[in-house]
Amino acid sequence: MSGNSHIPSSEITPEATFLNRRFFMKSSIWAGSTLATAGLYNAFTPSSEVKDIGTAIVTIKEPSMETVLAADEKVNTFKEIASYNNFYEFSTDKSSVALAAIGFVTDPWSVQVGGLVQKPRTFDLSDLHKIESVERTYRFRCVEGWSMVIPWVGFPLSRLLSMVEPMSSATHVAFETYYDIKQMPNSDSAGFDLPYVEGLRLDEAMHPLTLMATGLYGKTLPNQNGAPIRLVVPWKYGFKSIKSVVKITLTDKEPPTTWNIANAREYGFYSNVNPAVSHPRWTQANERRIGEGARRETLMFNGYAEQVAHLYKGMDLEKYF
Image 1 (tube, rainbow, N blue to C red):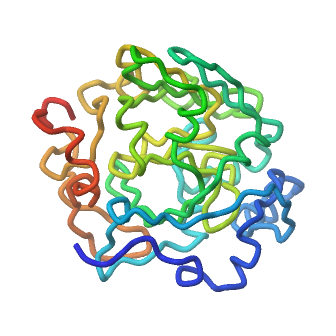
Image 2: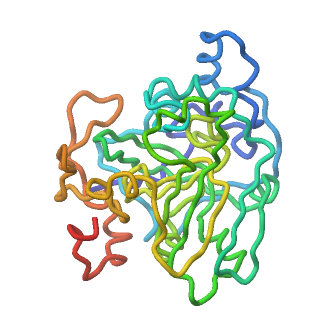
Image 3: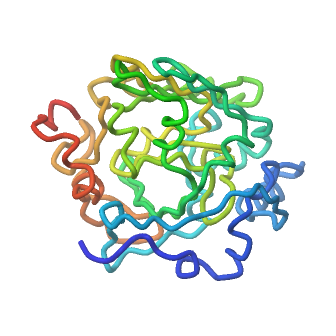
């Protein structure tokens, strides 16, 4: 592994795209079209209308937290990131999610944070926007064998959790996504119970690489990517990075997770990227980077072993997969 993945904004996309990088676009940028073709165009073409929410984007300076990209890796385009999505509440067809999610209402929004904390609190969008944001370029690896490199905007989850002061008895963090059958009429074909739930150990949640993303490519999250706020855990398979979060609960036990409930044999609680542990139906030793032809070798912990391997010291990573 070589290089530094914290690529400056000006190097991953034309400078003009980032002239307003301190501002987030209005949450309704995907709405307003009644024609399917126009709607799909809007889903992949961010509006130029922006709103000042007073959120500064700062550069991560800790060398130990910098992520690593190989010399032949490049950031995926906005269109690739916004047009190929897993979000079963809207569609099980990756190429159909963007169009199905156009009308999803993400403002107003609130995230309830409670459980084993000293100061339980409900955060609305204005509260979340006040948390100082960072830009992080991460590899993103799906359990199905495809991957991307995505320039996220957001804040470390640890900043949010510190505001509610976890109790000493808390060991895990549970997450729940938004669910409304009226807004997600195709969700009955998801194949599992909803709302979608996920979980992390507390030390995983507090790790500096664990991000609550509010945008990508310097813009607010498109609906299909988990607007208005989602989890991003770059060393785990993508389904751990729960979208459209509305509830975070600290607990003293391992929380249930949607894919593990649906099929425990294939989807473990940890779901760390591990090329040595095959999915029962396919290998995890290699992956297809969206936008590339040839497959590439999958890296242990998705290439973040230097930063996170210590979290699992002494654990049997085949048993705790």
